[in-house]
Image (cartoon, rainbow, N blue to C red; front, top):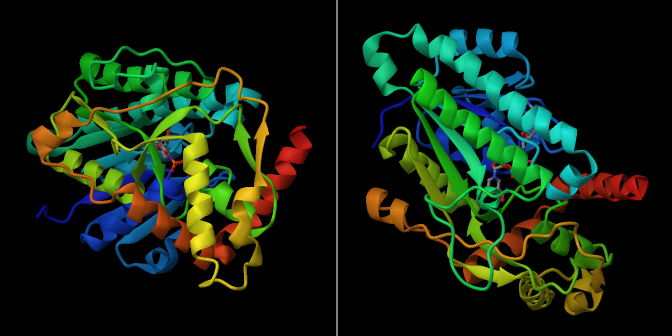
Length: 356
Ligand code: NAD
């Protein structure tokens, strides 16, 4: 097992970051979480980890070069996991410049601050250091009925979100090629699991069902996504940070494709099945009646799928969750943790009203 390391995580108060930091602390590492605490950042999701002796938090924006530089030179990370980003496609359609600023300018600023630090390192430390950039399969655009994205897929982003993430991938690759910074890029499919902000599809279906609000489905619900449990994604990131090849990229997916409509119906079925266990939520029994078809998202990508053969073959990664178990345990988590999501869901409802 890997020795104890100093690991800087950007965006560690977000959905994937929280799940990753929990794992890193369990594995005995020292973690510095650098996060701006936007609407999507929630330190309370870290629970008891917040007071762990190996954990520290710096409240900062990844576009702040001076703060990044001083934080990095003080903490001297051996690994950086870069997750901080604006992550919601719908928000990117309403406010694209914010996405360009955080995802592209922020990533470039972090790369610059990291490079300054890395160039001053001793030879041995230099060879040991890794910068892992966490990106999405959405940078590859949209698939037809068949085929899957892999590491050789062409970039063809189609939303302001995916374009800004594609831009960030290119910046990371450029700092590798131009300055030799030891970077690795990961492109993962849609994650699900605990602590996901309730604006995203799966927590929204669950939280709206409990609150007897409509469950919106874009268009006809025929768009297809490949889902991966966030723990499987985090396991992949840990393996990559230990054994991944510098300069390479890795596609990570659950190989678990669902049309949005089929997924929402499945979640409603699970909710109904749990209704006896959660009598405090009477609406669960008939959750399916909440489904409403709404006007399609602009430029809605039809299908994403990932071929993860490379990471399976080269690093021995295997997802441990199948969707049957994963969806049920996730639904149960949201039913048991209403306190965590309720206020967030309400503030998201009012955001939406304001935006109309
Ligand atoms: P999230 O929106 O839940 O969390 C993002 C975090 O970044 C928040 O804590 C937020 O406060 C922080 N942040 C935002 N702007 C910042 C800034 N300017 N400076 C510092 N911190 C800032 O996102 P997530 O779902 O956890 O995704 C994490 C990363 O993984 C993102 O880069 C995303 O593109 C990528 N990704 C996500 C998925 C998915 O399905 N969720 C899939 C593939 C890749």
